[in-house]
Length: 448
Image (spheres, rainbow, N blue to C red):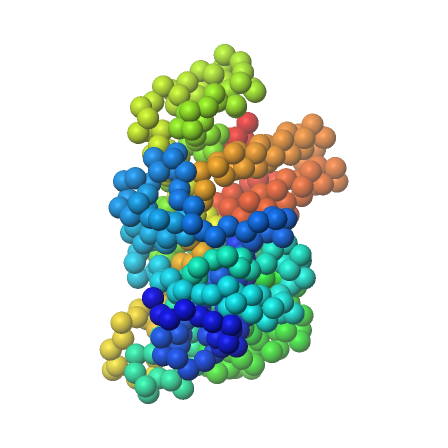
C-alpha cells in the first residue's frame, strides 16, 4: 500500500462518475504511483444511521459458498474478501487480461470527508439524495483508469485515445439481445441505439475526459449539440469525412466486438445461472437451514414435485447452484470498457490486440476490460427471487388484460413488465418497449 491519503490529497482527485455502490475518482496529479489510476470509494445509503467500517467478515453461510477459493473466507474484512473474489473467481472466468483486481490504498477519514464535499456539486442530485461517501472506510480500491490507453513508451504520450464504457441500465431503444447475438448487423444496431439514448450505460472518453454520455445521471437523448461536440472530439482519433466520425466509432466497436469474442466469454459466465432463480432459491433456503418459504407459500403437489429433486440434493451440489447463480449475477451487472488508440507505426510491436477499420483504412490497438465485479451477498438471493416474481406477475396480468397483444392496455402492462426487467439490469433478460411482444413472451413463458 502507498502512504495513507490525507485531506490535502483530495485536491488531486476529480469526479469521474458513480454507480449504486461506488464513487469513482480519476487522478489529476503528478505522483507516478497514481498516474493512470482511479479510486473506487464505497458509498453508504443516506437511510442508514450508522456506516459500516468494512471490518465485519463473511457470514457463516457465505463461508460455505466461497471456501473452495483460497483467501476469501480467511480475509479479515469483507472489503478484502471482495477483492480476493475478483482475483480468484472473476479473473479466471473472464480472463486476467480483461480484469484488474486493483490494490487497496489507505485513507484517512478526513480524506473521505474532503472528497465527499468536493464532488457534491458534480454529482447528480438524485445520487446525492440516495447516498454519500462512507467516511468509516480504512482503505479504497486503486485500479487502472480504463478510459486511457496505457503508455508503452514516452513517445506515445501525445497520442489520442478514445474509450467506450458500456453498462446495462434503463429502457431505451437498445436491445441487449442484439449485442450478444453474434451477428455483425445486430451488434451495429445495438451500438447505434446506445448512441441515440446513452443514459448512464454508454459513455465515451477522449484521453480520460468524458465527451459523451452521462455522469451517473438519468436517461437522456442525444441532442444535436451533444452529437456535434462528440463528433468534433472523434476527429482526433478516427479519419473520416465530415459527419462520418460517429459512424466510424460505431463501426470500430462493432468490428471489435464481432471479431474479439469478448461477449462470448461473458455470456458463458452469465449462463452459470443454469436453473434460474426459481430453482436456485430452493437450494438457498436449504443452505441457510431455513424452511423453504417458496414451497410453503405456493404449495401444491405439482410444484413440490418440480423442486423436490433440488431439496434432495447433496449439500455440496446445492452450494454450487447458489454460488454459480451469484457469480452469474456479477457477470450480469458489470461494465465493459474498450479503449482504442490509432497504431501509427505499423512496425512497432504492441502487447495489445489490433483491429482494422476498413472505412478509414486505419489499424487500432485496443484493450478491453471488465469492471464493477462486485461480489453479491448471499442474502440478495431473496431480492432476486422477488424481482423475478414481479416479472412473472406483470406478464400474467398482461394476459388477463386482453387476448389481443397489440392493444393499448396490453402495451401498458408490457411497458410495466419491461420496466421491472430493466430495473434488474440483467444482460440476458433485459427487454424494452421496442422488443416485439412475441420475443418478450418467449423469454417470460418459461417462468410460468
